[in-house]
Length: 415
Image (cartoon, rainbow, N blue to C red; front, side, top):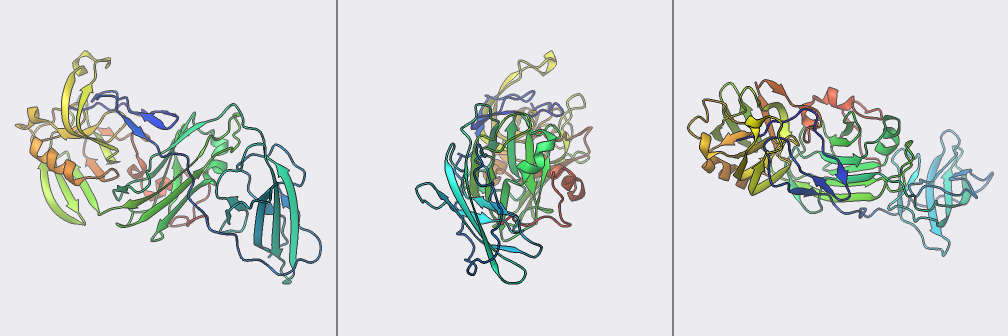
């Protein structure tokens, strides 16, 4: 069996759970969950400057302003060559808010969303080009919680270990309007240890954004992510619903490559070939997708249910073992004992990668979510957004999908 992937299929996000309904290689309608809304902890403010002197700095948000979004960042008008040395933000009862100064010095970002309908006082101290210090203060009030919000998700969990091709995947429902994507992207923070440059890429309808490096992550990398969208205003009258964050690890290098010409899967671990696996891919009427995909979900046992397929020939209900999802449209790696006699010689599936029971069990025990699989030589090209398709594009093509300019080689962390 196998799944016929419909080009461009994307699942919307509702609350904390993404529906895993599929259109072809059917299943039991399981769910992939998002992380909760907690934001990662932040560092303290920069070191204090010297005693302020001269004209006061003009701080943003402006003094006395009201209805400011809870995503507000603190900044000040500075002379050319001026540099912020300290930012302090306090509530009306004197409690100090933690935050970080952006690496480019453009603003100071609270480490968690501000509270709705709350008064804050910001004090910014900066050093002028002549070495003197200036200071400015502003008191402002945030807006009440709005009724119209976007739903968002992050496909990353704290303390999990993923494969080297695991992209950071942010998802939005409804999608982010194109003119808002730069502002939203500025609020999506990724740090890697060891440091590796990266970039964001938006799918056309704005429902997903992927973050990746020019090459697969280095084994052992720590990913620290904050999608800081709570309260961010959008042009469609909606606001971001929540901040999400996670810190996860990247494991060993494990990669699968499938060549339709030979109908063999070559499996690599840490750069060395560890097994060659005969496969049966999608038949011509329901071809497998060519491109680089990643393992999105694993189920040791499930049910593929395609009874709602418009083509009667593609309707069936079948028990499946060792299923590994590759696309939203229903392409999987899975055990297919019914096709073992033709695996390595003939394509008979509905789009999935059929392998023997023994090889499916072995692969299932080796793979992690985020491990890459590249399929070549089929009649269908992987559709953007049909799964976590961040690696289906070259780096040069990938950076074209960023809403902000990307330095050559990729951008560093914002903090």
